Image 1 (cartoon, rainbow, N blue to C red):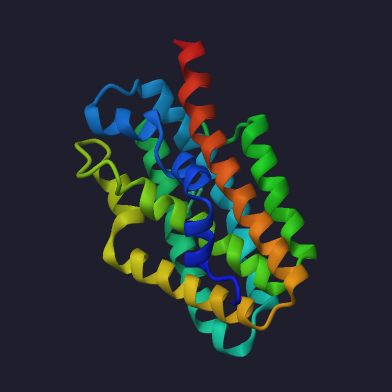
Image 2: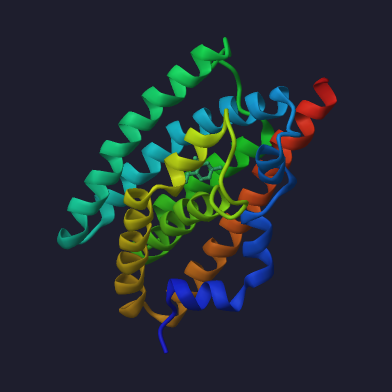
Length: 211
Ligand code: HMH
C-alpha cells in the first residue's frame, strides 16, 4: 500500500491536531486574543509566506509536466497574498521590515532544506503546509470580525479545491516513490505538523510577554 495524504492523517492524528487547533485560533473565534498576539502572527506570517513562495517556486522546478498548471495557479495566488499581507499590515501600522523570530526562521530553514529532497517529499510537505491553514482557520467555526477575512483566505472553497489538488499531486508522486522516499515524506509531514504548532505558540506567547 503506497503512502497517501489521507493515510498520513490517519496514522498521526495527535500531531495533526496540535498543528491545526490552538488557543490562538480559539482566541480569534472567541474575541479574547490580544491585538499584539494577532499582529505578531501577521508580521511573522508575512515573512513566512515570502519564503514559502520561494519554496513553491522550487517545487514547481521539480514537478512533472502535468503538475505545472496547478502549481502556477498557486504561485499566482501567493502574489495576491503577499500584497494582501502588506495591505493588512499597513492598516495596522505594522512594520514588515523586521527579523523573523527563531520559530519562523526554523520553519523557513525546513522549507529551504526540502530542495534537496525528491519531488514526492516536496509535494507532500507543500500539501501539509496548505492543508494546515485550510483546516486550522475553519475548525473553530465562523470567525468574527476582524478575523473573518483571514479565515476566508484559507477556508474559501477555491482554496479548499487547491488543497485537494495538492493532495492528489502528492499522492500521485508517492505512488511511484520507493519505501525509503515514502519514509522521508512521512518525516516531512510530521515536521510540518510540529513547525505549525510551534508557529501558533510563538505568536500566542511572544506577544503575551510584550503586553
Ligand atoms: C505558518 N503555515 C503558516 N503560514 C501560512 N500562511 C500557511 C501555512 C499557509 O498555508
